[in-house]
Image (cartoon, chains in turn yellow, cyan):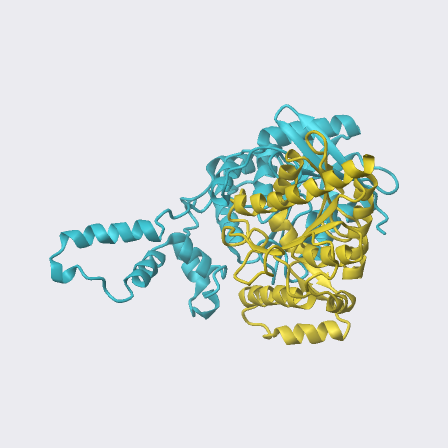
Length: 254
Length: 317
């Protein structure tokens, strides 16, 4: 876990829940830059790696969405120690799914989702599609498999290597309970930012931002991608929420 | 939980700040450690967590392992060019040599190690060779995964807009009846551009192009023809090849792992044929992996590379 301390008095905390595996590797430079940007704009920021991925220890083959949910919630608890009532969870891809669940369970006070997949299974199927493309390149003479073949292998309990990581049946099945539907909490402090052509939820809960293609979590053609529109939109919303938090805090202290 | 303890580490050297992870050795501590440097622009765990997994495995054998993000990459602050095609020429010309050399010295001094073996993939392997050549005392060996021995493929700056302007210019000189756009003109233009692209053909012949599998070509024969065995390929990174030659000629230990018949391996072999001619390769092991890609994320390569590293570690002891 890495903490980026705010420059000056902190307006609140932001916990970043990132994408998984190869998406994490590609997103890394932009993700770190975003954390530094948030800190420069007055937020204490925490980012971390899920168990079995990146800098975190653990055997990837034993991980599930539930384990990673626990990881996120543990980091949220750390952030809440310093910023009770002013913690935003911001997730990208897998992180958006986990963040939504954490927000609904009252582990965070606000939620921002960047490019939330429709569901956990849909996200994994997307990754399997990329695996097929990779198979197609590497195993010219080999047996041709489909995504359904891989799904069946997972269901049978076999390990399937996807982008360098071995997926297990437990991981595959754990994704089934995750979907990005509109949160039911009535705080109103949530925002889903669509970064592709999908229609976001209606304002003020949804927004669209244009980012360079290919997107920064799929390829690294742009090491310093121009994400100003996304950053500005998100900072504006955080700023709006943190003004409200400042008012509540003043009322409490009065 | 993993039995290997990982510790976050920050090393300040004159060339910048490196942020890394130390894998504490289990049991008696070896006098020579393993240092992983960034695989190109990728954070220090490597694609598929290769560097992290291999470090855990080696730490279990008592080898202290270190993985650092060099300035600008991963967690380490520092400037970076905006685009990848601007970054790789810097790497292949030794952008990280000075900082890695300083890092090696600092880590050896602080950890009281006799030396370090430097490991990296692609641009990381380039960095390993340059650093090894410039720091003979402390670098005890190199682990080169998919070393890129040629100067980075130049980007074709003739984007669609440039090509369109060029066509417009030609058209302006033609009689009116010839100046209308031909159907599929843009596609033809792009196809012709690819037809005469050296790198396009190299990718096709080494199956790094998605259409390569459909081309019934005697790939080996064409590669033999295109890359003469008697001459250094024109795209050779000469300073890198020189550093590599000195290293091998001095009988310094090297473990090389490449993806069989892929672009990097083809060039590595051809360049070696020329620059290492007459040099006896001692303490030198080259492993070729089948059924994997350049970044080792298919065919179980993460485990295979780790296993080869373990079984060949005696080279460095």
